Length: 485
Image 1 (cartoon, rainbow, N blue to C red):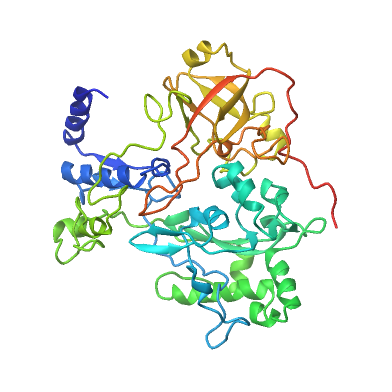
Image 2 (cartoon, rainbow, N blue to C red):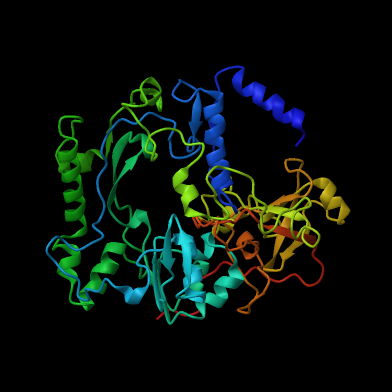
């Protein structure tokens, strides 16, 4: 970017009221902490933190964060731990010298390099050696990076159990799949309005669980019964008794702030609406008196330089935000002579992550020749003899995939995009097999953002691509199991 453009941008920031809005995609890259920290520094330089319409936000794009909260305290969830005074059957806290918690994006590292010590947020983590996984409420064969590395890692596991309602790639890589029902086949309770906490809804079961599926609560109740611990898990309550208990606890927590009826009336009424929250200005109190209303930083102030992080001595996250060269980068960066294109794999605009990708009718509204779209600048496509609607092989040293070309001027030359959430469908079980549908995580790299966060780095990814020739393989991402026991 030319210096004059940067100067023009800086003058624009201070010519009026400006709020910097940061999305989350920009952090999902190598050194992803830096732009977030740098943006706060820029906001401080602009001088409008704590003023209406000024400052910086890291979440206005998501879950009604920009909408004032009502202050309603939502219902709690099912307890994660035993009740006070009870002990687990195997009360072991030493974990054989391994760390009991890890940065979540480093779980594949545990399988491939158990016992390795890594830096993390000012401390050390010794990656544990585990033999079994129980996967519930998530789909790691969607959201994690580097599918072929995952294939190698999963060979180390002795048993994988997945609780799911859709036949995902995670199910395909599992030994045992326990079929869960959907939210329309069970009762529940939830807040609506996301972070604005606008109200409470009763989620009534619409139909009984289909086929052999069961609610998660029933699955876990029957499992703990086999362990002889059902009463400890359920506390002797049924599904509806738990919902009633959670509602009553919520009613008590909001006593004097929000009027809530008795549970039976709420369940019949189905919806409680608490209106709109009162507008407020983030950090206005800090701006008014930063000593009485300090921030949560060690100094209580906006920290352009962090002595705490500086003392960690990290190579890739130092005491103030700065630019670091990446392990790979397009447009003349490392590795771009072989793989010159930057692959973006941000969130899709037609799905929520991987949800609904299995719907054939819905997929037909955006897929190209039955594959996930790859968005390409027309000049880049022309240089490779690719036309709109062609099948394209996208590849790097980590993997390869098929996708359908969509030519668009929305992306500059040297940049292509395949949106995350495309279901993984390898041609076969072998490491290196082509993904027949177009999962971008076949190509992304599985490295930590830095020693500080050790977070995902999906958007640090370079590739090459070409028009696909030869016999087109069928898509293997969808369909059910071969046999059910």
